[in-house]
Length: 284
Image 1 (cartoon, rainbow, N blue to C red):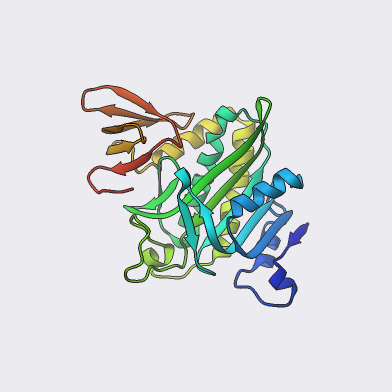
Image 2: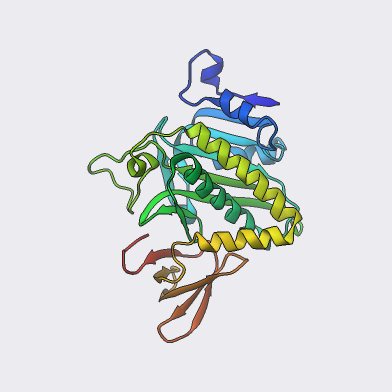
C-alpha cells in the first residue's frame, strides 16, 4: 500500500486530517492503495486529472485536500473551502464504459455520499438533479464528474466531491444559494475521516456491483430516484437558451431529466446543461 502524505506532514508538521486512519481502514479496499493528501490544493479534480494523464495513476487513487482554493462545480461554478472544515476529495476510476454511460458513476457516487451522511451523522440527505446533495432546501455538497475519452471508451474518470461537514457560515457570509453543513444541521461535529471511509467503502461495493451485474445497476438506479428531491415537484429549468417551467417527472438511466410543461409537452434535459430551481422554494 502506498500512502503519499503532504509535504508539510513530511516536514513533521501535524495535519488536522488523519490520513493514517483512512489508509488503515481502507487497506483492503480498491481505494486504499494510493492515497494522496495535501494541506492545500486549488482543486482535487484538477490535481487528479493531471496525474492520471501525465503519470498514469492507478484506478482507485484518492486525492484529499484539507483546504481548497479553486474548487470546480458544474457550469464553471467555484467551490471554496476553508482549512480543516469540510471533506474535499476526488477518486480515479478506469471503467470499461462508453462515454454515454458515465452517468451511472455520478449516480453511485452521490448515493454513497448520502449513505455516509446517514451512517455517520444520522442526517437523511437527498440528491438534487443532477449532482447536488441536499438536506431539505439546503445544499450540503456537490459532485463533479470529469472524464477523458480514448476512441469509443472512457480512458479515465475523476469523481470529485465537496461536503460541508464542520463549517458554519458566519453572519453575512453567502454562497448565492441556501447552504448548510452537517454541523449546522445535526448540532455536532463529525469525523471527516469516518465519513470518507464509509463513503469510499460503499462506493467500492456499488462500483463493482453496477459494472458486473445489470440487476444491481437497476436497483441502484431505483434507489437514486427515491433519493431525488425534485421528482414530482414543480421546477424551473434555465438552459441558457430557454426557460422551462413544469413538473419533474422522471430521471432516465442516461441521467436526463424529463419535465412535463403546463401545456403537457414532455421535454428531456441532459445533465450538465441546466440549473434547476424548485418553484415553490426558490432553490438553486
